[in-house]
Image (cartoon, rainbow, N blue to C red; front, side):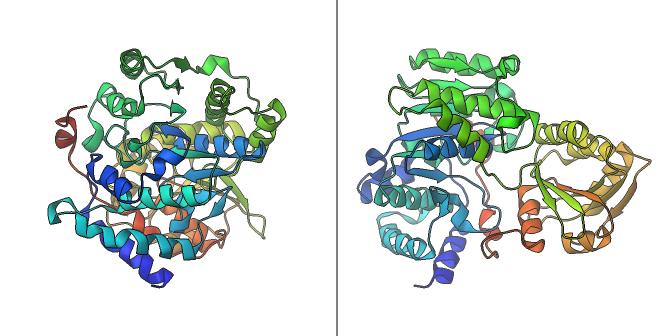
Length: 432
């Protein structure tokens, strides 16, 4: 099998959609010797900030000399971004080997219970991290938490970044229901650290922690001790993510000791592309890339633009997925730009660029607004603009990284991010 054939095999698993539940994942784990039992984890869930928090945790523990596995999703350009050890992407040869190891196991599943893409990738990661003898794995949920394939592990700590509206069709229409799914990663006696401040969501997390006798640590906005000078990542929200990561490290200090200078070095050296990533082009043009893929993320981007680029005449390239609250995303971001170009995202779930343009005109009648047929067209049109923001979807950011030649690995694998899920009603009916 070649790497291209292995990727095609994974791509074909999209046929089986995304199922919520742990049965398949547990069965695959059993068939491969339960690799999760040989590893230590920090499990991270939440609506926004999961990836950044994971990147900070990974960087801190790597600075402390540990061999650290990192499992995140979606990827921006290459599938291999999802599975890393000490920030080195899983080699193509290992992707081929692990696909070859797992594919024959499918004969143990009936047609109606075929493993999905994310279930298979979860077991690829577990088997790879075990073979790499990782000291610790930073383990990000895919969607939700309670019924997410990653939830077969018992971690050293459970981290819940925040709760906001996103994926309502799968997780529920209220913050309380969404929080119940995210809080599903809480395990008996395992400490929980959260930056959630929405009262409805926090009530659910506190109740679940009490039920599980899990010690709860809360991080609040007023408690910031992290300064921007200590962080490699832009944004006020990253202070909160950093404080959350540091709190988790300190909660686990007896099990996994980390010196204070390693914490500082980890925060100063963290790298997480596509989140308020400022790029300086050869001709002097600045491009800010940010995956502001929901309303809460759009507000964070808007606030960051005002704080860091207040006097800049901005051009916005915006592309959003149809199943997101794209109207409110447009309302949030359009007033921040003098010129707006809406584009389709390279996804079958893309929102219509003319519809986005209509919403942006309503939100900012003074702006020049254009609907473009592609990101490539939009980038050509803004070549003379000094400051450009590309935002609205991580898929769009990934495409921008490729088109701007900023990706360290070959692309062509963003289609693996596509999936379809089980409706929320089906999810909610499954007992906890």
